[in-house]
Image: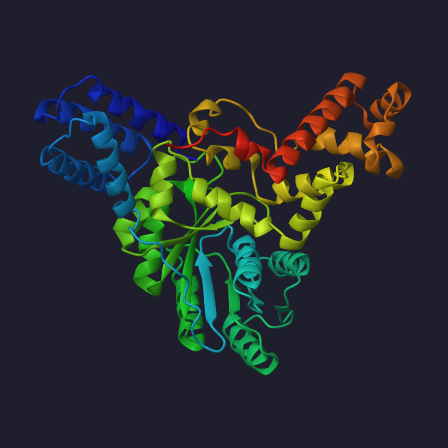
Length: 439
């Protein structure tokens, strides 16, 4: 996501490196390259021009401090303006009402149904809500079944009427069901429709009028680039939606939609989809996204994802086992499972400052733990709890059973031993003693 744009912007700022001060000439040269980078990323032309004009005006009005280089000052100005371009403040979802009603709209194939499931899972886990999913797509044969499968995976109820072909009636009845059984919010998944399809656009307008939703979200595939912005404008003219959801930001997208859509429709981006997994949904934070575009990472989001998988009781249990030298391969497996739940590995790595550029050409497979898990699963229960038993013959057997080599098994055992020593140092406080004291 944004890799090409990040690289191009970084190259643009290098024009100012070595310069003693910001002048109209070197700023113009830098911003010409910045504007070209934005246009190549499929940002709307008017948006790109207005953006660079604002940056130029602010840059020329700045006095560069001795301690701050012109290129560093330009990065800060561009960062601040990127943040404003994408909305400035983080926009919250509106969950007022009893129940709150959330209407999901968008084009065919934009990922509405999957997003509905992701949103329900997020609201259940983070907001302690009891959501109800509503299957109001009566046209796509697999839509109801897809939503039903998602509802089972996240243990959230679904409302559907197989024999009814009127989405307005289904949505109305679903809200009655929610009120009767205490579900809140109601998430209404509607059929995909084209903005040029007058009949379908009238239908979703009728659904809106009938159920009076607290929140209307427009789901758009970010890989459609500038077309996504144009479509958003058409839908907004008809629905006056409250916010945008950008899906497939983990794909080969140039990022133009994320940078243009807020300005063109004057509606905030509220959520982004970053992968196939049901956990791969993030609230959209303009400042953090600006950090990532400029290659600064996003350590706050990384910590938040880790905290979502962090279990206090489990952590205390692991800490006690580490202190007693009882940390074993069963515990190691549970730690791997928690990391995998955090999302796409390359996406996680790119959140670490400075890592994004280093790994841009490296293919990090989501199955990176596959061999490790295979080796551990090939151990007997006794071997997992007591790694000291693993002599040469046992290692050879494990390698054969896991489809790996004895060298792979030896490497894992060495890494496991080093991990145990490091965790023991951290829990015992030796790491703190080793750190130099501040004066």
